[in-house]
Length: 99
Image 1 (tube, rainbow, N blue to C red):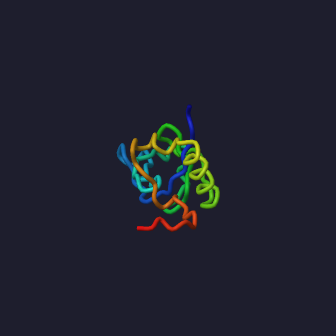
Image 2: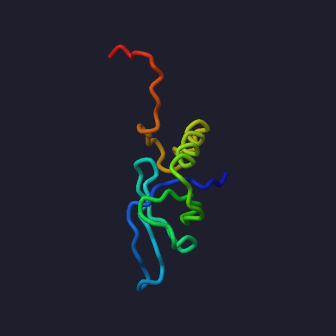
């Protein structure tokens, strides 16, 4: 299954002698390099949807968090980094763990 995953641009830079815009994008704590060739207007701190290493759309933070929650529910977040947890997305269920 192919999905577009939301992430937040942390840093923009150019490669190929300034011809190809790139970004370091944060996916819930995992930083990946992403091409901005299809979305050169994206800015640092923007949330973007990324598919096969290319940013394809800018989304707002609320929408990005909704997608993260959905992917967490269906177990697709581990495809970014198998075994990796996303603690900032875990919700407190109100139960005391007794620890």
